[in-house]
Length: 85
Image 1 (cartoon, rainbow, N blue to C red):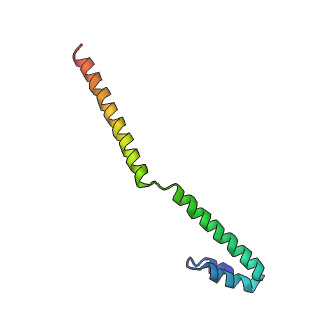
Image 2: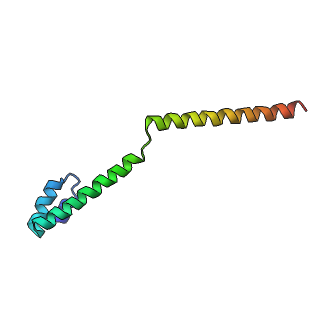
Image 3: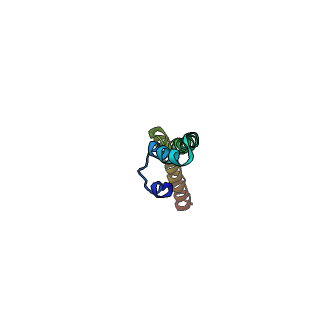
């Protein structure tokens, strides 16, 4: 019964608790659902920590623009050196 319900993506922690409490008892069901809830929270917290913010993107764009301008100046300097030997 639990395995068939676990394939359903729409199951809530409360529904899982209800199913588990009938099978393994209230305390064990509470422990299991608390563990699952904690793991889910940690997973999403980790995912949101690595997402780029607007400030991160702006900073990256500025650095990329600086590198681009530096490379263009270096290329122009090389062309100038080669052409006016």
